[in-house]
Image (cartoon, rainbow, N blue to C red; front, side, top):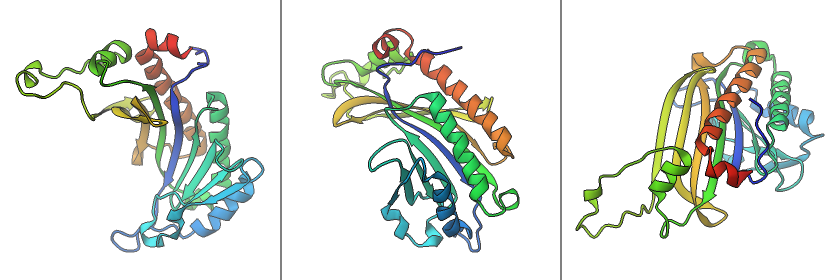
Amino acid sequence: MERKILKNKPLVEAIFELRWQLQEPNPGMKLDPHYKILIGRVYDRVKEEYPFHEQLPTATMPDEIAGYVVQHRFRKQKNEWPLIQIGPGIITLNDTESYVWEDFERRIIHLLDVLFDAYPDAENNLNINWLLLRYIDAVDFCYEEDDIFAFIKDKLKLNIILYEKLFEKTGVKNIPLGFDLKFSFPATKPKGSVHLRVLRGKREGRDALIWETHVQSVGDEVPEDKIRIRSWIDNAHTLTDDWFFKMIEGDLLRRFE
C-alpha cells in the first residue's frame, strides 16, 4: 500500500545497522584484522556524498574491546544528517528530519555496495551476522496533566492496565515517573524478530512518549548475499511501516499529516 508522506512526522531517528563476524583470538576479544584499512577504503568511496569526517572519542579504545563500537562518522557537513557510522564489525546509516524512505533505501543500498567493494576479499572474509532496521518516534506529553495509559490505549492501540487498588490509600499517585515496556515477537518476512518498545523520555528537552519499532535478524537468520540483503531491507521496511500506521491510525495520523 502506498503511504502518504507525513508533513509533521514524529520521527526522532531512523537507523539501519549491519554487523559482521569478528575474529576471537582469545576469550572476550573480538578483532577485525581489516578494520584499519577499511576505514580509509570506505571514506574514499563515500566522500563525494559524505565528505565531513568525525572521529569519535571511542576511537581511542583498545582494539581488543572495541568490537561493534562505532568510532567514526562521515557526514555531508558538520552536524548534518544523514550520516554513516563505522567501527570494528559494524556500519550504520542514520537519518532524522530529512528522512524519506525512498532516499533512505537508496543510501542503504549504496552503503551495501560500498562495504562489499571496500572490504578486502569480501566474498571470503565478510560474514554478515546482524541486520537491524530501527525507527524511534516521539510525541510531546504532559504526564502531570494527562493520563498516559489512556493516551497509549486510545492513540497507539496498546492496552496497559495497572491494578487500581495499588494506588488506593497508599499515597502513591498513578503518574509514572518512568516506564520502559519492551515486546519481542518472531517474524517470518523477513526471518527474524520484530521489537516494540514504549517508554517515557525527552525530546528536545520536553517530556515525551517515545516508541521504537525494530526489525532484526541475527546469525543464521541473516541472508547470505547482497541481493538477499536488499530483499531483507524491503521486507523489514514493509513490516515497520505496517506496524507504524496501524498504531497511529486515527487521531495521531491526522496530527502528523
